[in-house]
Image (cartoon, rainbow over the protein chains, first blue to last red):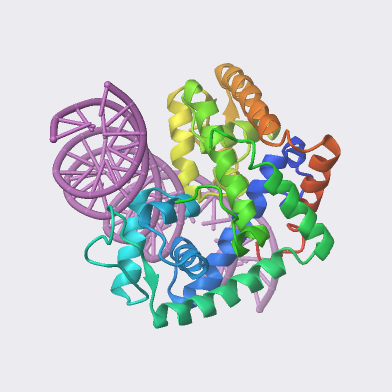
Length: 148
Length: 148
DNA sequence: AACAGTATGTCAGACTGCTGACATGGGGCA
DNA sequence: TGCCCCATGTCAGCAGTCTGACATACTGTT
C-alpha cells in the first residue's frame, strides 16, 4: 500500500486537514508530557490554573473541552500528587477554587516548555506571520458558533 | 464567572485555538451524524472507503487516526448493518479489503452532505480564499513530521 | 418569605479507545 | 530451503470519558 500517495478529495477538506494536524499535535504532546507523568488534560488543567488562578472545576472543564466529571478526576489526581490544592469547604456558593502549589508551578513550568517546543516544531514550516494568520483565521471561526 | 472574557495567553497559542476549532467541529459532526445513526469514526470509515475502495482495516485505521483494534470494531458494526462487506478469506496475505455495499453508498452520500454542510457553516466566517490558505498552511505542517 | 430556575460538585453505570499480546502470512537473505 | 523481520487481524484487559442522576447553594420573581 502506498503510504504517502495523493490524499484524494479528503485532502481538500479543511476539516480533515485540521483533524490530521490535531492528531499530530496530540501525539507529540503525549510524548513530550510522558516524562513528566502528565496527560494532556492534566497539562491543560495546570496551564489554565497557571494563567487563571482559582478557577472552579466546572470552569476548568469548559475551557479544557471535557465534562465536569472528567475534570473532577483530573483534579483529584493532581491534588493527590500535591500539584494543586482545593479548599475542603466552598468559600462561597459551591465552587471549590483550585490553586497551584509550588510543586505544581514547577511541574507546569517544565511542561509548558516541553509543549511550546512541540508547537514550535510542528508549526515550523510556517513563518511567524503565517502562524499568526492561521491562528486568527481559526479564532474567527469560534465567535459566531452560538451553539457551541 | 465571565464566560467570554479575554482568553489570556492561551488564546495566543496556535495549538489551543486549533483544539477549540477541532472540538467545535467534532461536536457539530456528532450532531449532524446522529440522525443517520453514525459516529464520527464510522463516517470517516465510510468516507475513506468511498474515495479509496478495498482499503484494509489497518490502512483505514491509519487514515482515520485510530488503532487497528478500534477500526476493527467500527468495521464490524458497519458490516452488521450491511453498509460494507469483507471477504471471509484474504485474497492475498492477511488483508481483508472492505467494500461499500449499495446501502453503504447511500448512507455515505447522506452523511457526506450533512458533514459538508457542517464544515461550510463552521468555516463560513472565512472567505474561500482564506479557507484555502488555512488548509494549505495546515497541510504544510504535516509533510515534514516524519515521526508521524 | 416562598418558589422556580440555574449552576456546581459528586456518584454510578456504560461505552469507547488504547496498550499489550498472540497467531498467521509475505518478503528478504544466507 | 530455512530463518528472520515485518505487517495484518484478532483477543483480552485497562484507563479515560461520557450520559444520567441527585443533593446543595445562589438568584430572581411573586
